[in-house]
Length: 502
Image (cartoon, rainbow, N blue to C red; front, side):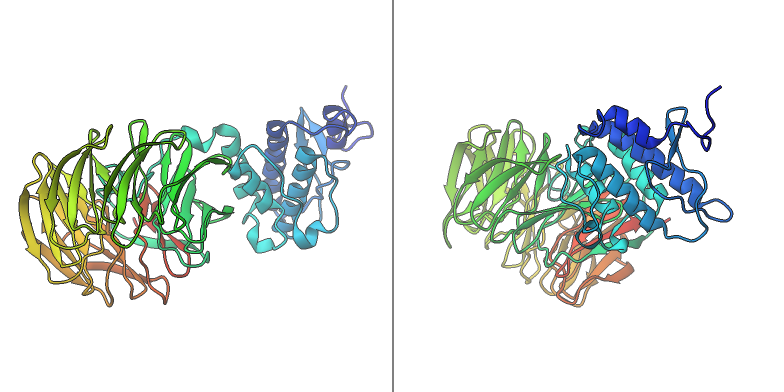
């Protein structure tokens, strides 16, 4: 008859680890260590929810194995759940690195562990964070995070918002499964000023900061996963494509990083500055380039970062949109161009009238875009002819959001306006208290946009304000990204997430 857990001779976790690591001379397989960590986290959750709560010590010599799994019995009635998580993290750190815990970890955390993915490394860093408030909120939350890491990698899922404006047509419309009736603030992270717009994978938020870092956050909690210095400055919104994150920089480069590890894939110097957001089109990536005040180009690169074609024109701050075969992009030369996506050949061009830094949005054969002279135009994709014009007499930096047959756009006079995509007929106008340079994002019958007044507005199909949330005194230029959980947006202070209301 086998020994009971508390009887002499009972197998302990220390015994188990000694055998698995050849008497502590080898590291444990990452997945094996995480499975043990998950079981211990579940046991901690069970102990913390006992009546009264128990706080067992995380000591391998005192943790008994029952049917091959660690079992936490006993424990005092005083303790702190996040202290137990630190002890669990220190044990995991030892299992995957072979380094014994050190008292210095209390002050500075353990050395960064080179795990197989960003999210796994961030999980371990969160368990062992020196500040208790930076750790998981509970043992249950830690167990769930470990379970996700053991299930499947984030790159296996189709990203819900992989591009600036959400899709290749740049419509700015979320694929929300249930139309929301409101939004509730979920979390905020002070990263410093963010002008670029976030993109979302299944579990992560990718957003560049104005000081040139690519910041990766956990989508559900806002927990920092990674912060990588990539340039002197960055205002280009990233793109997620085939396991990579692509981002332009103020140093004139297009960079590609592996989504799972954040390791560089390629770096391509394209010009003086890249503010345009990359657009994957087939096997290519298309992006606008600024070479000087009056000169620029639209450039296509292959998967290795090699330039395939380059169409010279005026400075291009605008991002390209595509219907799959053609690329549509506007610029400071006051024109919108249609290019063959494979070869970059000019198919047609249309004079908008003023400089264009907004991104064209495509819907039912029409491209909608505004210019610095205050024109909002609809241009037919088939032949480049003007379908309609609305003269708003206010500079338009904002890219239009197209949803339900309505184009919603922000204006420099502080109004958000809606127009029919078919003929430009006005639908509504809603005031904010500052110029709106961000681009609206649609969620079912609702739309949201940040203003330079520092607030984030949610309004209905008639333009009535549903809610207004303060983000930052310095205002918001970033456009919101959206998924089934809600919205994520940048501001002069950092990154903010909202959950969908009932």
